[in-house]
Image (tube, rainbow, N blue to C red):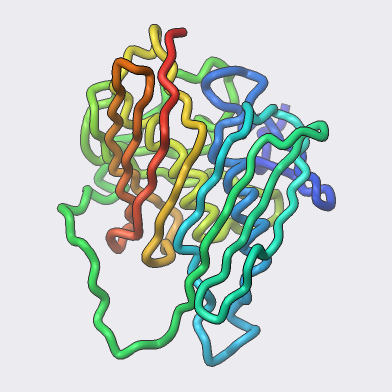
Length: 267
């Protein structure tokens, strides 16, 4: 059987998944990253591009939030997106995906105008992780299927040990999100960022699940290059609620941060 060439194939507003979006918790459900990135892709299409205003820089999606209303099945998804409010400085977008007529995930995004300013970039400067070339290859150990998100993403650990707390992990897509398209910087970030809790595991995978019903990504600049680093830490409480907190980097430095609420439960 030929290897899948993308996470999804487009069929109008419907996106047919290959095996590659398959997640770790159930063979019939997707990992959150690929469907979240589909919603981001749909919203990006509503944002003015470089060619539409030569004197302006295109807006930056500075905040993206996705809510997983129910487990996303490994089935065709219908995706819609709209401008919720168009402003001169800030634009609000929303999108949703349905499967079999049921909403499975929805997202909102906040786009901030960018301009050419006489201003030196100011950003936090935490100790940078080692680059992907100096980091150790890593294979996710908790996927049961032969093909899935874990085979579609290349992962390398720059810092930390899997299963023992905070980790800095570089990730990049081995295949496009949608067949025949080059992934955008935002899509690369979203596909990877939903793995913050997956790389910074603190619970025994044989005893516990820690599914994230949401993901929020904040960006202060667009990512450059294929590699995205998740400098992630997970906390879990006895009341069954957790949080994954992830600093996001590209090979140039910090680009933003992501957060995931966690539903912790026994297997």
